[in-house]
Amino acid sequence: MKSNDHAPIGVFDSGVGGLSVLSASLNNLPNESYLYLADSAYAPYGDKSDKEIRQRVHQVVSYLIERGAKAIVIACNTATAAAVHECREAFSLPIIGVEPGLKPAIKASHSKRVGVLATQYTVESLKFQRLVSQLNQQAESITALGCPGLVELIENPNTTDQQLSELLSPFIEQFESAEIDTLALGCTHYGFVEKEISALFTKPVQVIDTSESIAHEIKRRLKEQSLLSQSRLNSRVELLTTGKDRDVLLELANRLIQFDGDVTPIEVAK
Image (cartoon, rainbow, N blue to C red; front, side):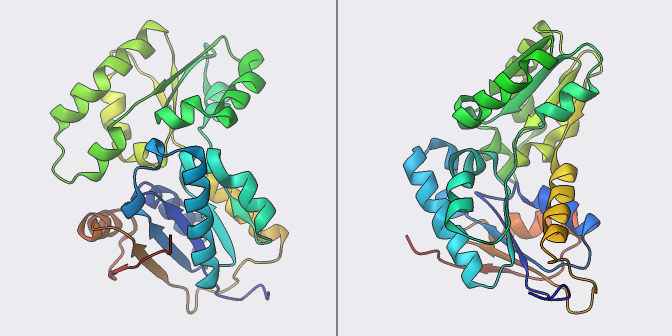
């Protein structure tokens, strides 16, 4: 594939969370075209079995490749934990996953007492447990908590600050009891409520969102395989959804990436 080829980068999530990754990617890789798929009809991934998630991720990746994607970003921690290794074995193009920002959180922490807020699936996944084991020696303590229901609140346009506070407060209390000074957000959705999370702490806590580092990894992988686009000419962004969240996706895309197009409803074969 030629370096100036405007084949898109396929980015997908179970909903709108991956827009945080898309936003960072547009800032870091403005010459590229993007095909973003919100698999909302199948959301949330976190309450599915490993087998179901792997099958669905394979289907979505296959669909994006059929649409001409030159690289795939699995912009979902749950999907990455369940399926990224199998996808890399099954497909030859670059496949970039995401993981909770535990490593940068430990690096940024002064006390080396860090927290991770993620989905329950991510916290319980073997991939995450291995990551914690690898980094345990570098930290004084790692407090990882799964937060059921936060993704759904973030995706609901009618969610109030009070609802967010009521859900998050018990988790913030646990983090404060563990005396963390740095918190890694282990779900791409959570970046949308970073300010609300920070405001609930009684003492300053640094919050790490990994969207920027993911964008740098995309750039590195594309450069490695001579897939970077050299010109912004003909670059484009397309948004797709398998669900009924067209208005939510469009509103967030307008706000986050100044997207002025439309959202196309699609079906991904089951």
